[in-house]
Structure formats: structure tokens, C-alpha cells
Length: 85
Image (cartoon, rainbow, N blue to C red; front, side, top):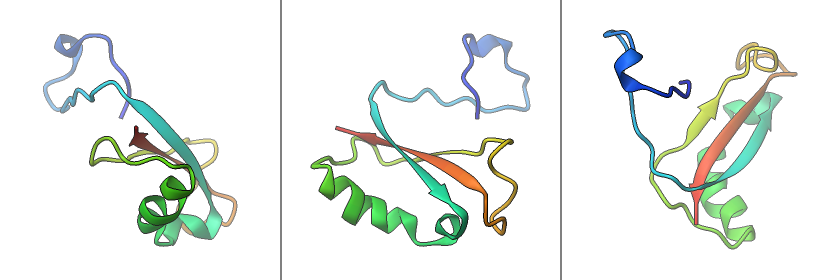
């Protein structure tokens, strides 16, 4: 996904979603972590250790074309954005 300023400028083939304003905890997964069970670690380990909880039931995955070359690439990196409160 990408951020846009005007929904009316989107091509018909695309779908837009308006996300609520919130804070995000951003985690970078590297190499084998990308294929791991990271969603449960977010819920049980990372957020609990930071004394946070999810504010909405979605996670944004950011695939940077410079850092992500596929799930089998040992040097790949993937950012996940978790809405928190």
C-alpha cells in the first residue's frame, strides 16, 4: 500500500482503506524471522514487555524494495507496523 492525498485520484482497479489515526510500534524482521511465528510474538512478548496493547486489529507489513528480496533471502528485512495504545 501507499499513502495518497486524494481518494478520487485512485484508478478504479485499486482499493482504498482509511486507517484511524493512532501510534504504531514498528518492528524490523530479519532473515529467518520473516518466516517465523512473529504475529504471536508481537501479541505475547513484544507488546507485553513494552507495556502496550494493540489499539486496532490489523498489522501493516512494509516491503521495502531495497531491503526485501524474498522470504528465503537471509539478508531480507521486513518492517511491521502494529497499532498500539
